[in-house]
Amino acid sequence: MAESKNWVLLRGLARGQGHWGTFPQRMKERFPLDKIELLDLPGNGTRNSEISPLAIVDYVSELRKHCSFSKRAEPFRILSLSLGSMVAVEWMRQFPHEIEKTFLVCTSSKGHSPFYHRFQWANYLKAMSLFGAETEQWEKTILEMVTNNHERRAEELPFLVKHSEKFPVKPMNILRQMKAASQYQFPKEAPGPIHLMGSYGDNLVSPQCTLRIAERWGLEAVMHPWAGHDIPIDDPLWLLEHLL
Image (cartoon, rainbow, N blue to C red):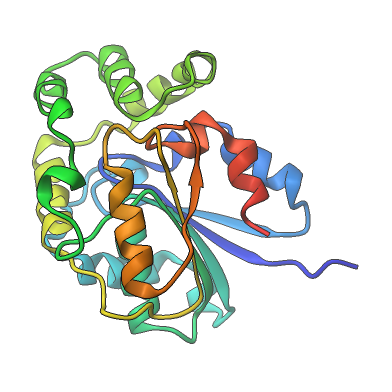
């Protein structure tokens, strides 16, 4: 009989647990014995009324207060995307006994890659247009930036819009999260067992960021051939197959 696993899922910049779309349900169907906990970074999703910290280390301390596995001293795995992966790395660095393994998706680090790889130039005008946009246009623009699969984009859009309408993120918190991400640098060595994933179709963060981290840490990165930055939306089945 397969052994059940504990999972924490962490989203990235300005994204809440509802922005996973249908992925958590697909994950439950793929791993029915596993326990899955979705946590929001301070300032995002269900925690949108809070002020986002300016340092990644503070996100870890905040998340541990809300993580049931940490409270029960039960080891767990983390699946994380982008900014969430920076938090996951810092969490593992500080509390290696808590985390069995981290699965990092499309992330980057100061000192490993230049700023214009960590947020590619073509996205600046689109990002600026988000401020003041209606919720549906907000989500459409973000999905255009982070996904390449038009069918999956259309399928997930209504759910994502509904979540953003219920839990809008404050512009101040977006800026604070961007500041935290821009200043965070991964440790020289991997802080524990890590599965590193990226995509050659990522138009938000250069795929070179993932490859550079892999080179520094002596890991082999698994690269999706065409998906955008948001692999859980673009190709959830591919991602699930790499969680084994």
